[in-house]
Image (tube, rainbow, N blue to C red; front, side, top):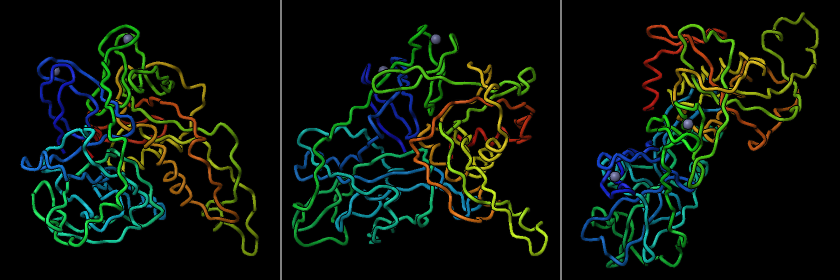
Length: 415
Ligand SMILES: [Zn+2]
Ligand SMILES: [Zn+2]
């Protein structure tokens, strides 16, 4: 998906992709980090003849691309999901934009006072409950697995598509033709208009606030690091906020080493125990003996990759890192010499804790009770760089012995 964005410094047109967080202007050479107030919002421009149509209505579509995990079989059905769907209940507008966002150039959703756009009320988690009413030329609604699903998003955005009402019918303002399945009265009075309509995208210079050096980042980076003074920065509102990070020592840094970033989530309190038993122990019990009712503690720390990679490797890496705990004393502040950029924000990684819990639960049987629910806001986060030894084709973690191919790591930037 491509977006036409004007350079905020010189006005030159710059073409971005939807995963870009950095704008680099080929004309004035400025390099800026784009920080939306919540999520990125784009619009599909109407056909030129409709550009000034006073009847235009913009309907919001939610866009998601990322990993989906089935919590019932957490070690199987993982996959990449790429979809968009109408973000409001309506019998008027098509359920999905289909492939249009990929074939048309989008623009940032900068609405004027007179523009009319609708409020998005349907979220990704609500989607399966929606009725299916496919309308050509749009394909039918995309299928999302039933509930018990965890989403780890690479892209979450809103795309506004233009429509207008004329001659007793709703029209698609891009193709300039009537929508196939709608006719009858104009139900405009039922619409919930979005009166805010302005979502300022902040452009933040990518210079180190401490020493003025150019910060190191790739287009998809969500944290920026200073190669000069080795500080870390998180975009926040209209500026950058210092971000603490750690590296795991004792991992063989003296050898050829490349570090991968992980989000380290911890509970600041002792979680309640619950009763589970490893399957292997259950089968090893002598006949007639009742299983021991010892509670096992709920896990209170998880490590989740802080970068994009295919869902299967993401799960295996998260499991391997979580199951190879290291003492807190092994964490020291500091940036490793060679490291992979942070391309998955903590808010998305947080959704993966449930997948790891479900995956680890697969190896135990429930004896009593159920997993206590922990509020996702309770988790404290840290960014930790874990060292991997570098071989010609692979990176190998010396403690967990987990290996990851360099190729998969590079491909992961485009899941
Ligand atoms: Zn420029
Ligand atoms: Zn610096």
